[in-house]
Amino acid sequence: MYARVIKTASKENLLNFMQDHIRKEANIRTDRWAGYKGLENEFPHIIREKSEKKGKNFADLHRCIMMFKAWLRGVHHAVRHLQSYLDEYTYRFNRHKMKEGIFENLMTRMVEKPPYTYKMIIN
Image 1 (tube, one colour):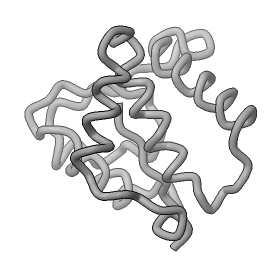
Image 2: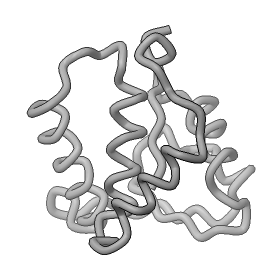
Image 3: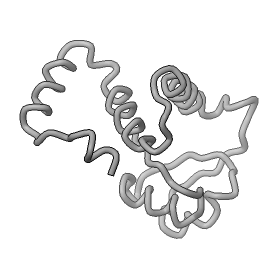
Image 4: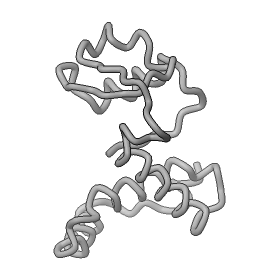
């Protein structure tokens, strides 16, 4: 899973995000939200499905969004740090099944990378 803060859900912003994280030949399932219209030119394998019964088509996605919102409400409060919160959440989510080894993975990353200071986050 990847996440990025965007000012508007315009076609251009969505396209930039998709180009950064999705291969053009990937099969992509979306709902019929108008913002996805026209992305077929860059991603020919987009399938736009009619939404059924409050997100039943995309249950995992809706569950992930609900979990993120609950986590965000419970821990974090500054909108200006939203991208950092998204980065932390996606890191945790993408590794939530790695019960063994997640601590070692985190320690390795901390040792191999330079410090990321609070000043770097707020600037």
